[in-house]
Image (cartoon, rainbow over all chains, first blue to last red; front, side, top):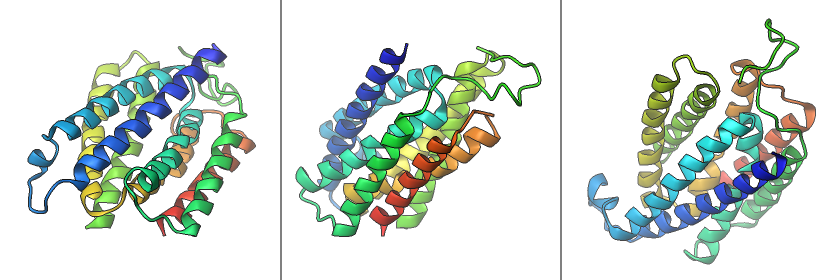
Length: 133
Length: 103
């Protein structure tokens, strides 16, 4: 169970970064004045949307296996890696303060990942005294 | 406009996360909760694509992580999840890092 959660978490993070980078690239190529519909109808944008759709479905599955308060901070690795993708692949300038923020996010995500992540409400405050599934 | 789009991303994400988490675990109202979650996800996504047109990816994605702090608070208060000290500390660190990145 624990290994399955970690593997799915890794796949979710990779899909998130890949989809963001592809979509970011596509939107940067969109000329000013182009409508919202036209901007997301480009082939590259569609590819990015397909990867992000896979990410969304896998993340929904992960939310069914682990607490929201585990899934959200741990998947923060995706935020950090997306910033890296922006700097490396899209040649964006990220200031020093931005990289310090990146390190802090990674520390927070790691700290959260060390906690137990079973799904279910707080048994101590649940009047039924059991964890509904 | 930049902050309006960011509000759409964060607000849509938080509402969608709560509805997905609640809907995936409980049978009652599962269908409408997941359907409504998709609507909020769409609001968040279209805000995301439009913000990408006017701001760098290295700002847009980390800034959208502002939803983490709100998600963690609502996971405890609404979903009644157990949120221990380390998880709170981790979420606060992530939020702090996001604020630095977004400046």
